[in-house]
Image 1 (tube, helix red, strand yellow):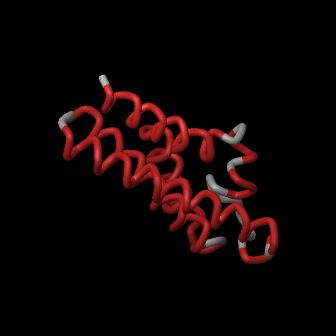
Image 2 (image 1 turned 135 degrees about the vertical axis):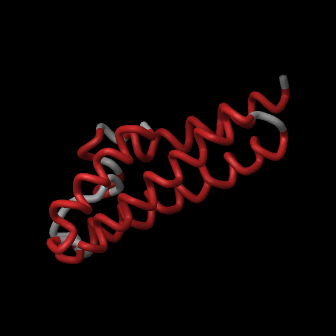
Image 3 (image 1 turned 60 degrees about the vertical axis):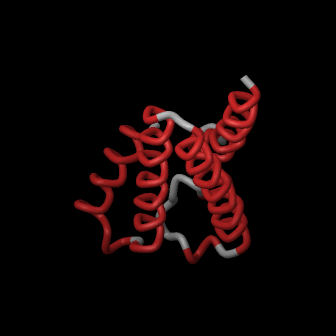
Length: 111
């Protein structure tokens, strides 16, 4: 997910940023969050686990906020973001990923 998000964002920002700066900026934020979560999970440890949990929670808030915004005011997003329609264009993976991550992080703490 991290590599895909970074690649997609880099392409969008370098080729069509002027069409929808808000949408592509939000996609960039999502890419950075995915990379940070991946880094913390690879690093390991309790502090890294807590940081990943906070990032997953922030990602979920972002998906729900932007998803709602895109449904209520589609004109604000002339180009879709990863979070548009709660991740509809991505099989809802953007909304499922942070939930799955939080559940996994919570379960791994008990181990």
